[in-house]
Length: 191
Image 1 (cartoon, one colour):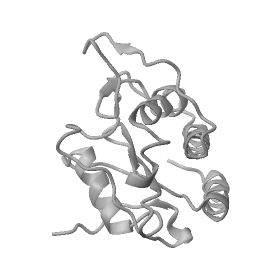
Image 2 (tube, rainbow, N blue to C red):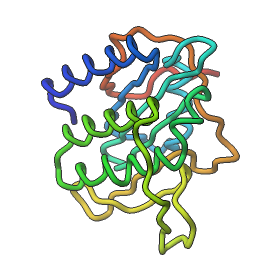
Image 3 (cartoon, helix red, strand yellow):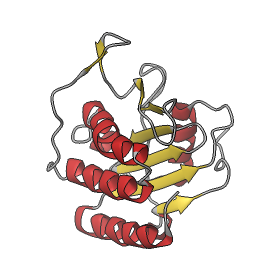
Image 4 (cartoon, rainbow, N blue to C red):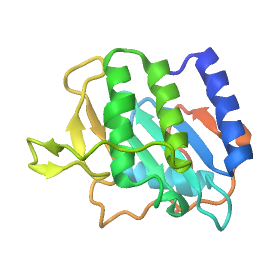
């Protein structure tokens, strides 16, 4: 999903972000969730990778499942005050989603990562919350909503399927070389 040139640019950008702000952001693309819930999968990745500094929980994972057409931003406890559910939802809906809909995955990843970095630096602000006419409620990190990537049936799942049932990521440390990874299948899971 990410071209080699964009991948290299993102790796450099994320390494610089970690060096200057001590925040770690990981981008993970997977072919499919193979029936797993996006929230459960994201939590397992966060626990396995330990993104963020130990004791700071200042990591973020941008997870994209291509076949399922789902996007999630998993935020460590230490960043929840600046990268809120509303901001995460808006980054997906207003930045990543429109690029993916247009078939411009590289731009979606690049602009999405830039927006995430801006949010953790306090430089990205969300527009007023919009209502989902189908649900009659404001979007939140636990919403699913239609957008379209290469098909009108794309669903982007933002956050937990049930916000009360899933804690956000707990993070420790990760090597900067793994800040941007594309894996063929599920990462190791904790028992």
